[in-house]
Image (cartoon, rainbow, N blue to C red; front, top):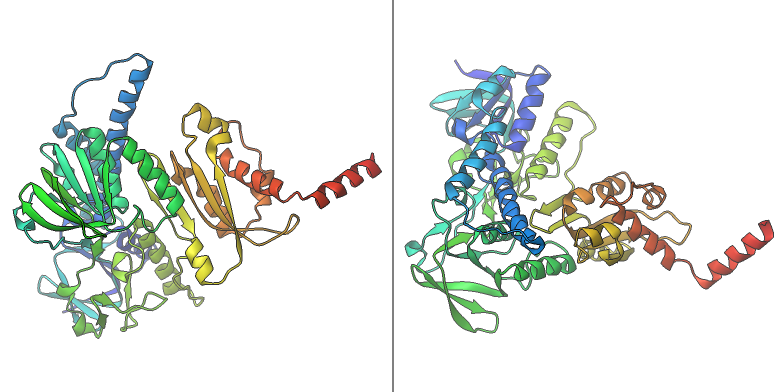
Length: 477
């Protein structure tokens, strides 16, 4: 007899776990399916956010230790990759304590391990057993895109699923892709001791971030010794340790390496789901989905990378919240990335949030661009990051009008933390006066947000305004 459930979730990553845990908590009969216990936690725990941030943490310790030499200390030796790997694995084990089959069953979730495929529009098949669900959620994530280049079969290559188990640090590492994943790994392994070269097909790194902030990061990374080949791509691998790259002007030259790291994006793979059995349509390799995250089978919903939107763990969490709302509320929520933010966790970090300048221009939204350099920020002076920059896009408004934050970007140490109050102000539609009037403990780093607003207000004080203020002062005192 078929097993029947209120909710069936395929995939135990960030989004799938969020929906499953909430559904079980409110008493719905819930089934969670993933390929194995090891896959629970998804890419974030196993191959992405957690191991990469642990590696970045280690590399920063190494970098900071070397910086201390300017004050008379001495640092020598190379890191032992066995100890690096052990630290990363230990951090993963801590989080895995609440992301595993046994724990999830304790929370009231039925867990089945195996490959799921659709049996009918309302049922899936796992290990030759049929499970029926009122609502079925696909949260199967994505995988790193493969690099298709002549000669790659002879090359020692890594991606984010294999880079965290290095036995030996590559002497020369060729990184293909200048997005967040490629740039984070480039800096981390460079700081551990690899000689890193990055090949990026765009004219700048981090093409989805503001050009000014990404350019500052590029300069900092170059100063650390990382080589960049921009507006270029791999043409072929001449041998197991030599690549030929082609630049936009059709110039070719060779790059020697010991290993490559492929960071050319992510793709979804839904071939094994037998979507046709559920009446779910696919176009150009992606599942067709509406603004409510419903497939062409309205009882089958998408969550996370497989939805084809922004591929972030926190985007999957956003999807989970939308799905939970729509499963229980008559007031349905649509997916919008208007308030989305993301952070590249390099040193310095690049943090971006809200609407970009291009999006504002394309939407014909009137805005003001505010750029603030950290040269005059006291905390930036003492902590040596005067190179920092904050860019804000503000709604139109005069001196006494209500201006709101529409989006922005920051490059700075811990920029991802510093922008959080800006995101909150944007999300809640607060006036920039809220930041202007806030009292910051001196000299916290986030005070730079207020200094940017102060500089903006000062520019609005025209000769006419100063004349009015002089009149008011003299007439009232």
